[in-house]
Image 1 (spheres, rainbow, N blue to C red):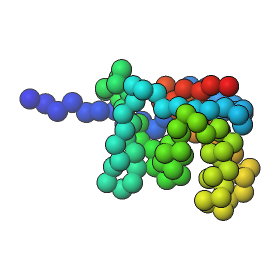
Image 2 (tube, helix red, strand yellow; image 1 turned 90 degrees about the horizontal axis):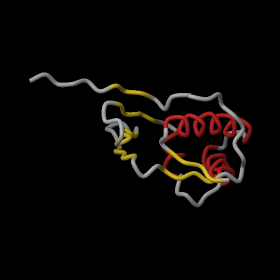
Image 3 (cartoon, rainbow, N blue to C red; image 1 turned 120 degrees about the vertical axis):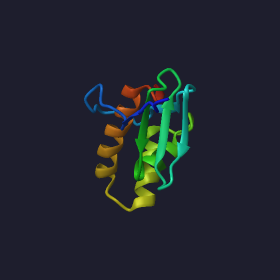
Image 4 (tube, rainbow, N blue to C red; image 1 turned 30 degrees about the horizontal axis):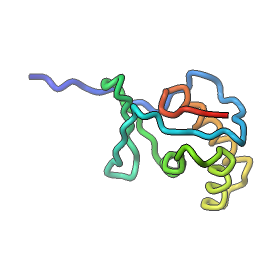
Length: 112
């Protein structure tokens, strides 16, 4: 019996990185399960598509852990700035791209 290879993806960009409202609140999609890998990365699977899983690492893992359906996008960015010591504009640009990718991949939902 052959082992079926899984496609490994980073969250894909289905839309261009757009400015996200600072008041937007994100929630992890209920049909997404995730597990921490051996090197601290997270592997995410959308239950509707078991042939594909996503891998996030580095600061993206920290941002994923902050998505709770209560914190605003701005609150997450501010926490990341405080934690990393990086310039807010840098974190904001990277966060907008990451959250756009998450939305485009169906891994999160957004309100506001």
